[in-house]
Image (cartoon, rainbow, N blue to C red; front, side):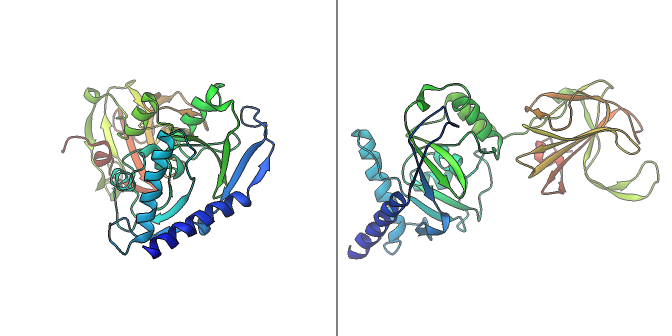
Length: 333
């Protein structure tokens, strides 16, 4: 009991220190607000939770759960909660949903603070900041967004004159990024649907194609030499619309390449994933343009080294080609 109280006291001392070191800033960048308080949170100074598994010895996690429960009661009673942050590295390999449930924190709270843009994202071994009160963290307007969810939240709250931001608020600088924290706020129905929809769009309409060449080693139809085929070929009539598989930006548009003909590369998740669309009859996008999932980016053709009309399609993770059939969850061949 004494040890538990000691950890609780340390957490409170940490919070008071953070408040003492707080800088008061004047800002006109976020809805012309004045006298806004910016609290700086440095990850290396946060108390660390080593495990989310319940045990008598796991006193830090027990105190974290206790603070969350106390904060929930405070909010229901109209009192201000204690804003405290902890650090946890997911070596226990919880899924995102399981981790949120274990911490008794909403998914949107964890997601918006830790740059997680969909509920199926792999967070194994990821270092996470765990707040002790629920809400939504929105990067302030001068911050560059790191994923499409952050872009959506900025558009919904910072660029529409939303009345929830017209009062003085606390702002947080967490690991060098400025956030507005909307305490006890939940995703709207549209935001939640966006967050939960992690499936990739097919690049062609479902009944408009057949797979004419698989991912992996194959004989090149022109040289007859065995070579890695880093994508799949989707045979379809010339002029069939080609869609962006996910929100992103146009990394490059290339006309008349000797091998790929007209092709487009899209960048997703701030460059972590790229998708390639080759042998196009034509493309409808420009370099650096942002695109939405399902938006038409071009039309099936047979430009470059193509034996017939088809879309050569690739998905790369961290620059490494992966089998698009598995990513798109196509029926087994």
